[in-house]
Length: 149
Image (cartoon, rainbow, N blue to C red; front, side, top):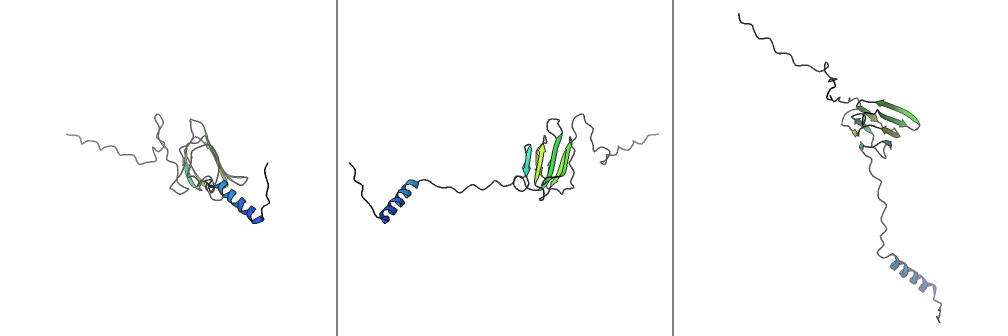
């Protein structure tokens, strides 16, 4: 048979405090982890929030993956600010006022150390003509040898 004794309010409060202390001993409450910093590299398809997922700035991509067409789109709210579907290398200025940037089937986008007017650098590939030929200075052929006579 158990006997229940009545205790005063102070004793009850002390009992609850001690029980609470022992119940939480060894249990650490961690602060929530800070959100990750916005990235400067976009290496996957998707829609990215400017200022949250990615930092604004000038980004470069070497163009499409696997021979497909690369598509990208800048948005400001519900309005398309700029977009392209291309098979060429791309440079895009993602502005701080943009809300999202969408990319599909493009090679990795990297934050560039150049102004928004910098152009992609075409890379000649095997079997393809050099697109800069005719625009870059070409070496002069050697002068003809003097004829003896």
